[in-house]
Image (cartoon, rainbow, N blue to C red; front, top):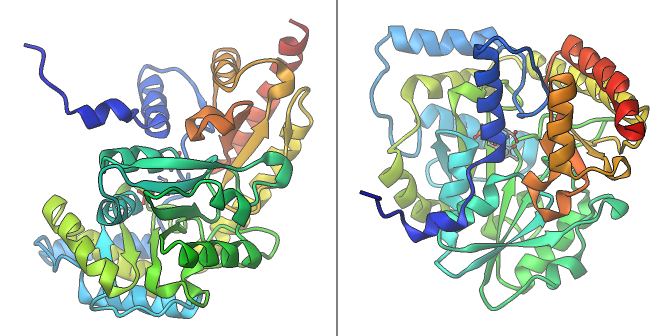
Length: 394
Ligand code: PMP
Ligand code: GLU
């Protein structure tokens, strides 16, 4: 029998970034040595006090459902963090949902605001899952194509050019994966004014907020005047706290959006894991020195990787302002992004993500994650420096 697969899946690709993580696991299991700059996954261990809190919770038998919105103590910790660090005011009892991953928070947000046939504007290059999630909701992501030449700046004019009668939301990421761009106040204000004028919901993915460079400050869109009642802020613990395997994130915003979102959350996962949430409380309320140390180390690695890339023939790369990705322009090598990524893996064992995974506008670029150890980054840089001249002449 050939089973009938729902039509909506024909519009959706498998996740290119998750596939890359899987490929690396598979190659390593067969003994192949790879230098993984592909998937965006911190190489650091989760700070030990967070693990200890979750272990204690398990030992104490905290292995049952929690309230669907999340443990009240965690909801309060998230609301306090949003107020102190992001200047966002939310009601801990009504304006937050703890989710198993930021990915699930994004899915919940899109399912809550998009009907079949609706559109969400997504500035691209963008992380791989937004368009797929919109597709799973039966809706469509409309690309607002940003230009490397303009430093991937979001402009009001570009957003206006994407609006149709079906536009319901705009989804932005700051700091950005894959471009490394951090939104400034003027851009954020333009996004809010645009959303107000067209009566749109803003979904903002701030999962890399802890990783910003050169003394920059992360800016939360929901903190801007006029934004709070139409903005859903998504965040999580994976990147800043090196907790990818824990699967813990959250969604925060006005009750009028968050309470309806509970229907999606409750009917898909009920709640995030109980002992994992106890780790989340320890993360938010415990010492933050590990988070700052990781961000500082990413900054040093950024300089190492971007310096090495710009020394390669046919490659140029701007300095990312945040997140842990270098988005390098490889057009002068004469290869497409996918060809370059394949060639590099075959020649050097270095895994990178083709720019096209992040939208058609990513053609000509590859993304290198520097959430890998310095020794891996140094070896990757050496191997690329040896291999690239051969590509240009050969
Ligand atoms: N948003 C962006 C931009 C990401 O790069 C990721 C990485 N996985 C996520 C959301 C999801 O994070 P998680 O599901 O691990 O919380
Ligand atoms: N966000 C990471 C990346 O962009 C991890 C994989 C994923 O969840 O997409 O590589």
